[in-house]
Length: 363
Length: 233
Image (tube, rainbow over all chains, first blue to last red; front, side, top):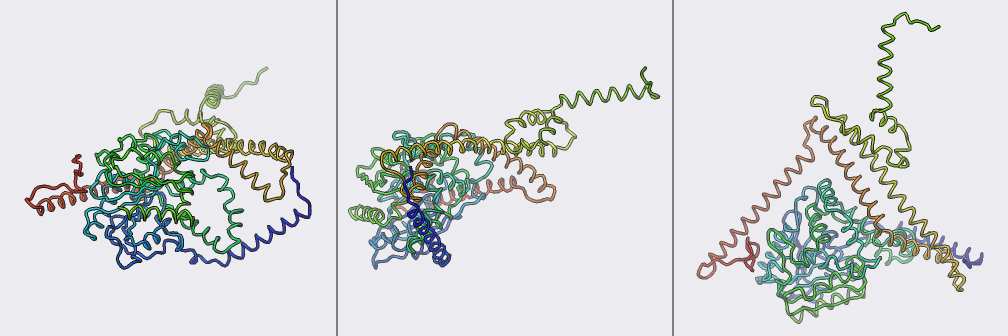
């Protein structure tokens, strides 16, 4: 079963010991201040409650006249799009001459438990878009949503079609039951978990805690890749610590993961019950502030980007957007990489940035 | 010859009282519950559902208006903690089975690979193969009905336990004239409703102003007003 000569075993043991010592030494030299994320310069231009609209400082003299708004998911921080200087979607867009804004949802607490997706779409996204329109003197801006932020972007564009010039959705869930088509054990655990709950379980969770803690969401994410979760702080860290640049990448990702915000209670209730369980978005039954979100009301050009190996949002969930929007200008792009990988892996990020910039340039 | 008591009346009374106590301890749920609570196995989650019925029986007794409710709440909390212990043990048992199944997969897989001329070549490879085996087993198990049900029951037990703790904390907070979580939630709910109302009014005002400024002064519906561009209310 195991064919290892004693000498080889000893050598491997010695090598492991050396790696361990190296890793300890390297980890000991890295200071917390060395691990920085979201460093691209930006200025706050609007704040509503805990939501802040930032404008990144342009990197070209005359940026494009129509600005672009980035909306990240509520379950993570927007800093994923600007993790490090040489792997930053934000910087790539700025270098391409775009005028880039981002929404920072902040860190909701129990005091925000009554904020629902209605507030996020009709108040927060709407106010940010209006502020950008006012500052740039344009009728409509470009909107780029990531994952849950993509759902907010779809809802906003459907409800306020005249305000968005071009819509880009990345790794965005549209059909929340589409994971059943493939039913792979390594994808879509969140779908299975959410459907395993009774609606009353979700009500009890929200009513009791007021928020869904970021730590709880992090635990659910760790269940999606159990093997990786088991080896993260031993084998993976040892491998990463073999090289200083790799170690810093590892630690930047850790910093981003540790910054996982809590989810407002009502947002979680809607997200889990109305979308993951009842799949209302694709059925044109999702209602915000009394208004039904109808995807066919989206008339602007749409670029839908997803990855072929996304374990969080299985590709079928995103692909479902095709044929659902009312726009005749619909583009679908499949990239290599994972849900997070397309934003942090050098090769995938280049593909992602180029795809977005070239698509926008034509419009 | 039986010895006669010098206090025959008292003997009868004692006999009646002892008999009542005997019946009470044999059939009464409080005594049974107390006995079971003292059994450490029940707190280690290995006593099965031994605590569930006694708790149900005691907490199901009718309430009396002038008897303080604190005891009942404390007992309710104990019940919740026992529930968490029980559900944790059930969840742990399912996870343990997955690990045992992974081990059962692993050894034959190693033997099979070795017989195909692919023996493990080192410690790291062994670890990688083991991790891959556990990963696959865990992925499968996590989607099984048994695992999901156990996880849901554990979550439910934890939330009920937290609710019971809150109830007691609120009693303490009220006694000390401190604001309670429930009161704070009420304030936040009111505040949230007010904020929404203010924003809606602002948007309506902006729409009216824009309509006034538009040529001809006709009402032009804008984003953020009560109606969107497709005219939905």
